[in-house]
Image (tube, rainbow, N blue to C red; front, side):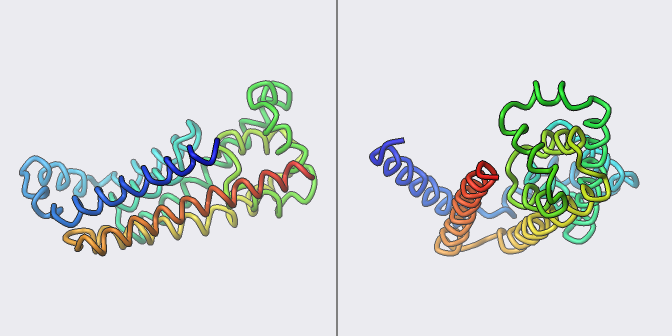
Length: 225
């Protein structure tokens, strides 16, 4: 991408953030919440005795079909609250990752490699050495969709006793941060000022850019291994 294109993209993102902040500061969530159907739907969902298990099952399935971790955590916290949502989504992602690992073992190495391409071949070579540390790094950033990461780990020589701790450590920071951020936004997001909304959205954008840069650095590091 040329310098001009990057400047245009940056200006566009900043403009969108300002517009969203203005809307956020003038439209209260309480006004939207007055819709009767929305209240009724939320009440029915919250009163479902199987809600925790339904969310847990959805997370496990979501890991298998490459639903982004951000979506899984945000939805879980919204439906179950901060503490319960965090524990349910975290355990659900670990169980889903373990299933993906076992599925990769069953599929064997070559079919997975044909499906995943060059990057996953790099993962497989990387995971064959320093398993826990590299598994932690791959999940921490992450360097690719968790579905493919788990399949590649299962198809490599990585042992399950190295895979699970590395996955647990790698998923923990991003899950905690996303759950906390979601909870805070739900608490303060009812009627922020335009300035507060602007600051919040800019911080989110900076976090996204930081994650993108960290991922690029990590890919260069993986390529050198």
